[in-house]
Image 1 (tube, one colour):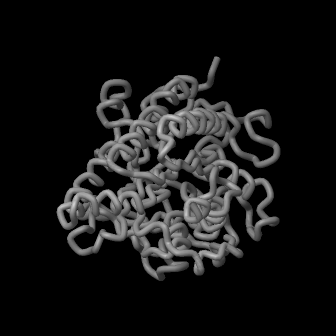
Image 2 (image 1 turned 90 degrees about the vertical axis):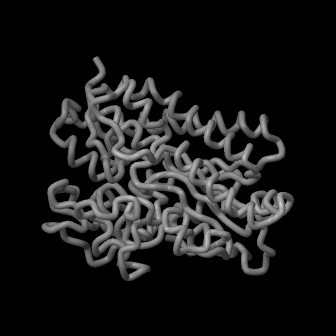
Length: 386
């Protein structure tokens, strides 16, 4: 019988290194004039903090978040830059402002619609299928695309219709990680792991519907990200240690001997990634005039966890840099940025930042693989050359 797993309802998120070498981007005429980004906390550059203004303490709006690069919290759930930031830098574009700051920002060079807690499935889906655990905000991919449509209307009103089409054709659209939050809400609502796995086709369909909507809106270059190995997150490992919440994670068979990660949670992620990659291949055939990149989020994180020293990470790969103690340095009662938490001296030596999100150094490594093709097909930089 499949063991039942319950994850925390991630109201603030769930489960959202190397410098570029020899890419020659400085000598390449820019193909892209703007970037539009969608997803969850792995890509959010401040939308959730803006949306949640006035609510009790939002931990990642506190120090030490942002300390490595920005020297202050920016609403990013990391110590510094995210994958989307490194993509923007490589394409010589400004870092993306959050859409919800539109009154104070120029969004003509791009905008970020990703938001902490973002899901592939709409709130209505959870209300019908999983009323015990529902996202606290309407922040699904469909909602984010609705925000994009509002921005598109204002941008297109400022230019001729032909110019608007050219603007979108010279924009890079990045649909970041989605799915981990969906499964988190399902599992927290009492669904078993096998039941959550049965919803993978629904999650993948929702992501594909979003991608196809963006194509219909004028997108010609899109990056679609898979999900990361949730069973390697310090949050999951701390929660389920010793068989908590019915996982029965008490024997070596429950853990990957190469990494120490939880096998079943990683299996769920791998299943979604397989289905999503197949779906992206089908969409390539359906839209031959559109360039679609599948960006692998799973393999780079798994490699960093398996062989951290090879990539310059010298600390325990399953231990968070910032947290509240314990073997994985994750404690919900003393989450990073809240009283009782501590932070490591060298975030760049760690893969994980706060138990759920990664460090800037890890994000840089992943971004390099997406840009140069190690973890993306085709590479993002290939799009610049086409």
